[in-house]
Image 1 (cartoon, rainbow, N blue to C red):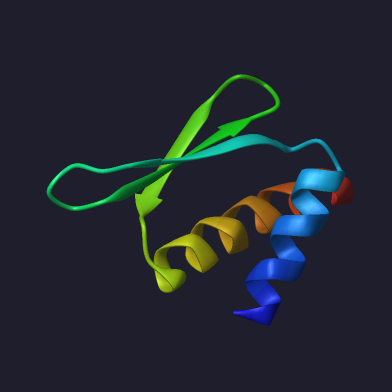
Image 2: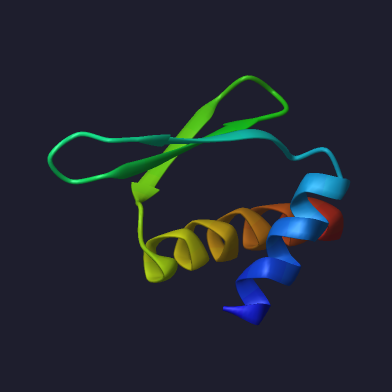
Length: 66
């Protein structure tokens, strides 16, 4: 979970993640609002959030290489 925390901190500090909200339906979903206004969702689990952060970080790294 430490890696996910570090990735979240970087993405938040870089302005990629603007807000995070927990939606409590039958299967809790975490909604992440990005700075561009788009919303990403994932299961509200450590693994689901870590996967979402890894995807965002990969997208950001790909943009940095371009």
